[in-house]
Amino acid sequence: MNKPAGKAKTVKKKRASSDSQQPQMKIVTSDVCAVCPTPCARGLAYFARMSAPGAVGNGVPCVLTLPKAAVKAAL
Image 1: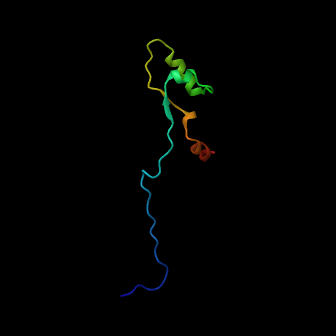
Image 2: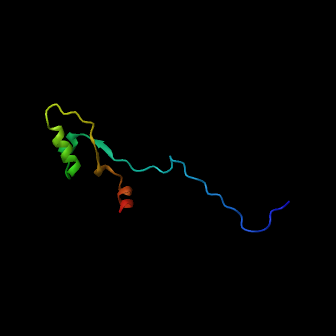
Image 3: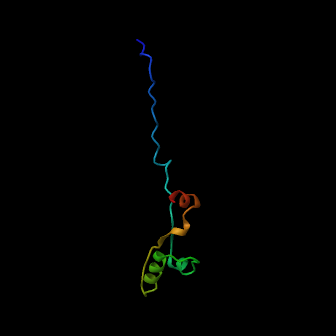
């Protein structure tokens, strides 16, 4: 039994989640924010919090560490 002549169905493969990775910002500490040539609001706020005695922090994502292709794609 043959199928009637007509359009053939095309099946699109789904992308695996590992194929579509999003660009990641690097986590920087307050010592990097202190010497940054172009300080941002997030970095300055983090640096101010970490300047207090006894402050403990894990860092903040730095916008300046995004890959160049990701920045162009966002525009």
